[in-house]
Amino acid sequence: MFARWDKMAKQFTRIGKEIAIAVKLAGPDPENNAALRRCMQNAKSVNMPKDRVEAAIKRAMGKDKTDYEEIVYEGYAPHGVAMMVETATDNPTRTVANIRMHFNKGGGSMGTSGAVGFLFNCLGEYKIKKEEIKDVDELELELIDSGLEEIGEDEEGNIIIRTAFNDFGNMSQALEKRNINVISSQLTRIPATTVELNEEQAKEVLELVDRLEQDEDVQHVFHNLK
View (cartoon, rainbow, N blue to C red):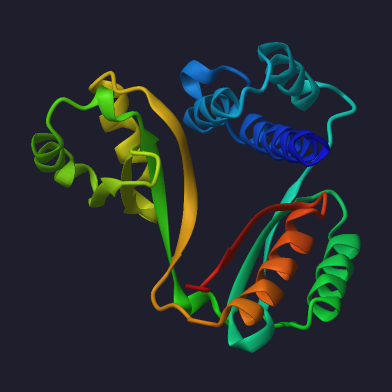
C-alpha cells in the first residue's frame, strides 16, 4: 500500500514539474500550449486530481514559482549497462552530487555528457487505447507523413506509436486532428542495443534504477538492460 502511494506521489511531483516547465515555455493556456496539453493528458493517465493540475498551473504563474532546469546525466550501471537520467531541478549543484552518489553506491559510475547518449534513440511515444483505432494498418499509412517510425502494441494491449524526436509536435497535431484520445505521451529513449544479464546481475542494475527513480529531482531513467 505504502509503495503504491509513494509511486503515485512521485508521479504527481514529476508531472507538476513538467507543468511548470511547459507553462514557462508557452503560457498557461492549454489551447495554445501543446506541451501543457501533453502534461494534462499524462496527469489524467495517472489519476492526478484536476484540482492538483490546476494548482500546479497557478503555481507556475505565481511570483513564488520555482524555475526548473532540465539536465540529463549519463553513466553506467554495474555490468556495463548504459543509463541516462533525466532530471528537473532548481539546484543543479545538489542534483549532480546526488546522482553521482547514487551511481557510486549502486556499483555504477557516472560519465560525462555524450558518454552513452549515442546508444539511445530519442523518440516521441504515444499510448492509445486499442478501441480508439478502427484500422491500425490504415492509420499507419495516414501517419507516415507526420513522422511515424513504428506502431505496435504494449503488454497491456494499448497501441504504441513512436516518432522521431523532431516530429513529436507534428504527430501530436496529426492525432488531435483525427480526434484520437491519447492516454499519455512522452519523449523516450530507446536503446539501439541491449545487454543481457543473469538474474542476480540484473537485480543489481534494477536496484540502481530504483535508487535513482526515488530521487526527488529525477524525472525518468532509461537503460539498455534487456
